[in-house]
Image 1: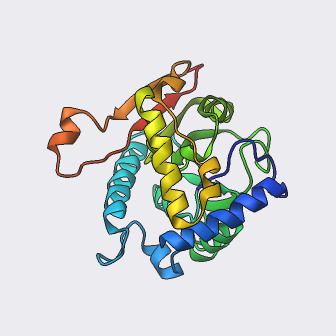
Image 2: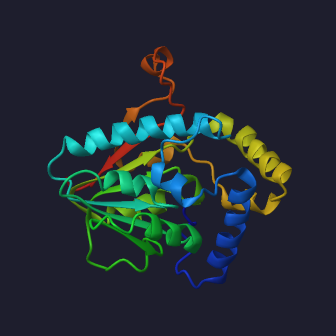
Length: 250
């Protein structure tokens, strides 16, 4: 997960409130994992209630790793909204790459640091793109995996991320839903009903629905389109877009 890009510092009461609420929700959803489970992710027991979801995540992870390994100039990666750190840890398996996981969630970050403490090319930071990171630090790749929906302004957070890219750097957005404009109202209603049904109606205001059109001012490419004929024919269907955004100066 990750916070709204309006949540500037981890000491902000808005951030603290969101963090507490988010963890409670994760527990209710069955998304708080034991250390040994986190270490094994994206592999998980077939009996787990989210097994099918992790099949999608596993395929996304494999595709992203292959993408990274085919590009020798990717030497530093930032994952925004790293949660318990499983994907950051997977990315850190690529040779000669330094990976940073960034999140505002103390509990999951503490677990990430504990579980993956032996990975010398991996570190975790509590904070946002606006704070905690050294001002002059740049990354060859910035990843938003299942986290972009927690940012109210897609354009604003992508703009902030672009400023953190090296000259040939890229942003990658994965495992998050994007909607057509005519789908937005129904999607918002489903979100409201989902959170209310779980007993967390206030989370509705922390989940945002974005359209691809919001990226029109950026140099972006759709690597995976969920509605393409290729995706419809494959047995490994992925319902989410995979979008890459290049540094505007590259």
